[in-house]
Amino acid sequence: MGPEAELVTLQASAAPRLARLAGLTLRPISSPRDPDRSLAALHEPDQGLPPPGWLAPLPFDPGLALSAGGSWAAALGAWRQPTVLLVDGERPASGLAAAATALLRQHGVPLLGLIQWNGAWDGRERHLDGLPWLGWLGDAPAAEPAAEQAGAALWPALKWRWHQRD
Image 1 (spheres, rainbow, N blue to C red):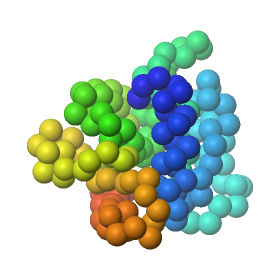
Image 2: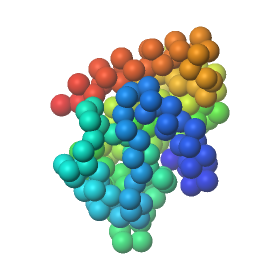
Image 3: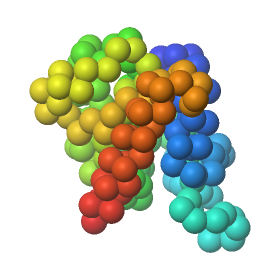
């Protein structure tokens, strides 16, 4: 959630890293202003994608009202689309993570959890807020120990939540 320019910058760095970590194909949203068309395209069976699937970063705030009505949050809930919320590590305690979680839950979105991107990670503090944090993912090269440890801890948590979603 947040201004579109910030989201684009955040996703340009984080989405490829998360997709590599999870072994997912990174796919674009085809029609950002038409969630139903975009979600239908992502779910077409003839995409020829190998398992386990894909990651499609949402190009703007899921709560943003669209000109045709509705929002991405409503569409994600209607499609029962499993979702991960990426939170900028510079603002994890701003209330934005709690507001986004509440919005997605209100619309029935299967929220797998929240991932903090960059910033200082304090797992104890993150879990005190009662939100479904999965962990931290930094912008450091994968060969750096902190990045390697973070990825190693994040992927099992994400897989576990994926299997628990039903």
